[in-house]
Length: 154
Image (cartoon, rainbow, N blue to C red; front, side, top):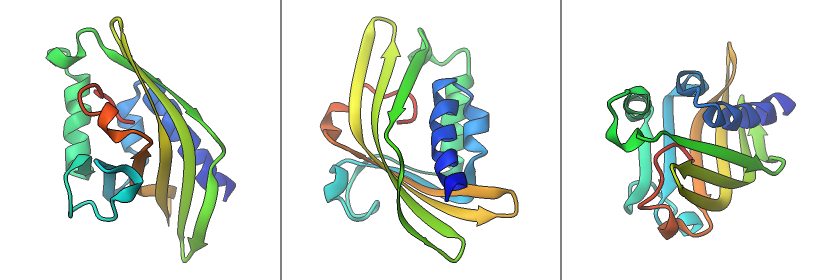
């Protein structure tokens, strides 16, 4: 289970370093990145609007946009810092693990800064190359605060 927990920590560190291609490589081909608009109260990514609900293709498109020097929203570039509590294993069986990780997330761009808190729920699958992220759910404590400001990946 320590390898799975290390993956969650590594994912946050790669985002903080703006190493988006390396970050995306942690995700399984059949992945889902989901930030529910209703936070923990939302049970299904398709039953209600979301702040983000992206498969592998949409994640790749967002990474490409963030790396593009002509991306207007990235002048000045956004930077982030993740502060994680220790991940708590919720389940592990048949090559899958579910981890819950409370977090604090700070995103800064120019003179503005956004502070968000909540919990990640990572559903990981074991592959020949080690653990991969099949699903990342981000339950924000106050999801409405994130809507106008977030540029990177929470």
